[in-house]
Length: 133
Image (cartoon, rainbow, N blue to C red; front, side, top):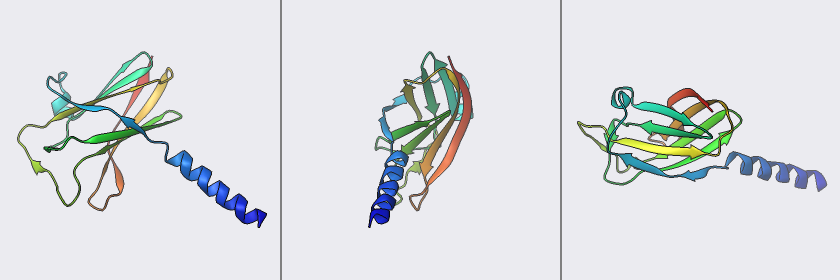
């Protein structure tokens, strides 16, 4: 009985550590830095923080939401947009989204932006490396 309890407790603590995703405020950007539209991804470090700008190929009427998770030197960001039942329609002008992750230690970070596929599984979309002062 004690072994079963220990196993369940281990599973719960592991799941809690993996689900430590915090809400991330994401906004539409009206003016973009030079080259952001062509690369669709820009990282700008500042002391203890990181500004991320992404320009998806599609835009929607609904506002996307985002969450993030920092583990070691990796910053994972999940952008949750439209559902597979209500996909976006392509537009001629990409819409840029901006987010700021604060509270980072000074070091080099790998940043991975993930989006959900049609089956709801998270997949990497954009990635980059940046040094936060």
